Length: 230
Figure: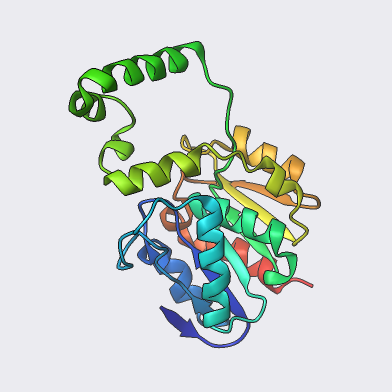
């Protein structure tokens, strides 16, 4: 979906989400920019995946999409999983975009607790004997809703630590996290990315993981000021 005219802005949605999640930003930004909002492969109205995509596969898709749409060094606004793709893409293609805004950005692999490791071992043992039971009772609620290909993709995505990619990002970057975000807490992901991405700024605002749709007016004011400043 494309709306408006002017400098290109590309919006990348989160996991199990779609372009509709950026309804308020698309409507607002299209008054000053040319806004492009795709459904990434496997989500929304896009075709189902024909293989398990990794973050790298999504980066290759993104590179092709930008070229196909003839976007001229777009500003990128990325939410959660979309931030994973943007960080890896820009670490490899620094001239592929202009400014970067990350909201609720994911990509930090945390140390696994002993309880987590015991649960993983139990899952692997039970899966050998009762695979259907294991798939039904282990893993997050989000994971259990996925198709087999999407499950493999999900595992590839969440197990890749993108701190090394964040270090390679040279684009002017703004990080926005909701103070009540329990998916990607600002005290964890936000502060870590802020410390890694050179020259980045961190703003903690009202709301949770979807602060941009919970408090769109405040969020839109922040991103507009960042996108239009010299």
